[in-house]
Image (cartoon, rainbow, N blue to C red; front, side, top):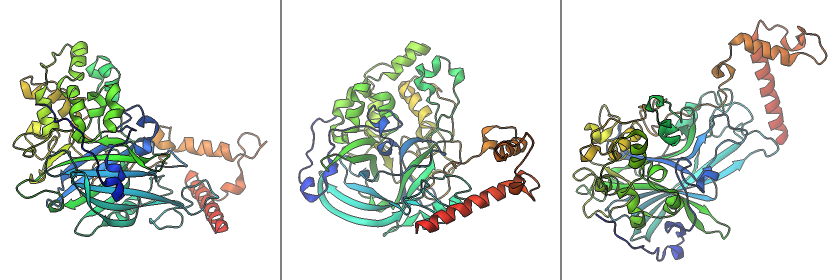
Length: 497
């Protein structure tokens, strides 16, 4: 089946003040998978998840992540959302490849004291703690559309605080408390969250080293372990987004619009199903895809019906590639599975499709629909779904008679997900300390501190007794040093005011 060609004009959107719904000329998205976006990570949408909320099955949760490979200790300038961007979540609730609902998140940054290099000047115990020097807030707008023309625009949240990057246990001794404070309830039973989280995508990225170097015995390393992302999570009553009880399937994708030099916005990121722009689109199409919209996906059809990946696998591992054209991939990833998450009169296009009437599974299976769990991928995408293995098996012909158990041997995330909204795991803290880096233990710490505290010109073995008097060991010394540092921070802060 072919995609329907032809672009839909944005019409009166510019006049109505909603200029970013028609993609501009810029491009990019996902885990560094397109040339342009790799240099601007604040706008890089890494993954989208959509699932019926396991603890509130009358609601749907959408999680969209940005900024790949956040090194937890990456200060002093930690990870913030861009102020010149519109982070959008699109919902198509009638299968026409156009968004009828759009949730738009925009961010502001505030700095209390610009005379210090510190993003926090002491232990942060709440989101309004004066020691949190750099803060962000965001607004949420609900934009309703019909045939890409504005119907209404309503601000549903204003100045909601963002959970900051987790700099470390000394700076943020109870990060879970900060996370909880960043979850806000909205009118009508919805919830919102924005802040740092552990990257929930689990996979072995050595696939890009010539498909694991031609040796599948080397798979099994979770490349994203220990890295964080910036998450936007939204939970809404399903009745607010589904067309009706008789048509419960919704299509979901996210985009980022970036403000250009002329002051208008251009789409620079687009993401629905995982891995599309990473391993389906060739280099010539990656930037163009990320500047495009689902209703224009006809131009990329050949990348799906004649995919490169199976031919590469055949060349390296001698596993025969399924016959082309791959209409089975069109059915699963562009239309939805018939009888499960394919809407009536569907217009084939690239997005996550979720049947919101399918109740959550008590014990989710990581392969989702492939393993008989209809509440999982590709019916939406849960945090626990192993999309690498499921996608690889389908690409290698699982649905056309070529049964296989291919995978990357990374079957779950390195951290457990939360049981309630926003569900993503807490981020890895920045200051993990020398013991976490594999040193020889406390004796090394004491030795290093002792050397550092030796007065200039003092002979070996001499210590600055004024600093360590009364200390029985490195524990008391650590308390003394931390206490002195905190005192200095607070003095600097007070002088600034």
